[in-house]
Image (cartoon, rainbow, N blue to C red):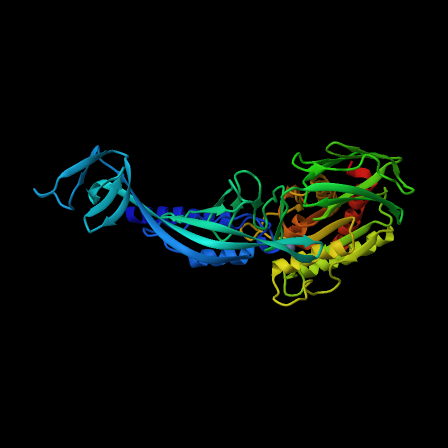
Length: 531
Ligand SMILES: [Zn+2]
């Protein structure tokens, strides 16, 4: 009986442990929505002999448009004395014919130049001799020298232009723990030490902040913008001239830039203050010509940016790409606003599914999107749907989910959206009682404030309209909002894995309530809610 007790206890502990692990890996908002969280894979377990890692090199070439030419490779081995007095002997033995040449104190380091089964031949401050392996902690590292050409790719809206290539020498240090240090030698990269973590997502980061290369999903640094596998590098972001035009009842300022300058902006109903990061060279001429402005009262160039005053409450939209920043000023109100609705998933991308009804998330999303389109159009908005039927968005070769998500962003760019809303339903298989409505926004973009407000307004009003728990708004790096230049939000209407939420989501009456609530939230947004 006592044995049974132990077995049952052990079983319960095991089940609890497995459940815990399971829950850890089953966070809500699973990756089927394309979240690109930076996931670092721990380095490979320690190898005693580092080796030239072909896979690692191949990853570099693929991820960073590099061409690498191998030059040479050299293993260095070092030792540390583990004892108070380590004798350096003239021969690898303790017999009468060996002499003690010198000693090394505990912690003393030396280079290992040869070895046999029991002895290391070492060089310690030019004393060359033999020490016993028993008292030495040895480590080895591999230095590989590569001649490298890094292709610099400038992204200009949807086109890729090669602007040059940068040859440099790359030294790859691989120690026993498979952590890598890359050292670049080139005029342009002088004093730059790049560290790279060996993982499926390599990271480059310079110490002097001259150039940072992160991979997709990471906050981009001052000078680098990263898309899937291409990046652009601009060494001195410069803000040049400012042009103004009035068209379609909007005032539009275009600021020409070289590089991708970091900036932020603050708005009130009547004023916008645009401020560039300190490292940006701002060369805006003091007199900016206004060609018959509709809303512009005045505009002033200041040392680190621009201040625009409007003659009435307006909606400010600030977007940027590699060569310009655009400030779009329009009247308040939803009428004539360009709204891109993105019914999540579609075609081969199923999303999640309802546990009771077996409804597919892609079908739910589309159904709500169509109702929302009707509702928004009745308010005078101009609606563009990333898909109007059950199909993938990306139609090119070599289909990838990432491409399908980026295609939704490109669709918004094509239609110059005022806002972008992606519609989804949630899933949490580890606990079917989890329920509620959530908004998601991205913080790593200049529109962070607008994004948060959209996510808040919409998710809150939906949860009130259909009486679900409001789970608030959360920051996330979902592709469709992370790479979106426009104010954007992703809405998880409720959990299709939860019985109560599901019953509401599949009901047409509730879907109509959702579309009306979303429309009201968007109206609030365009009535100046964002200021
Ligand atoms: Zn989804």
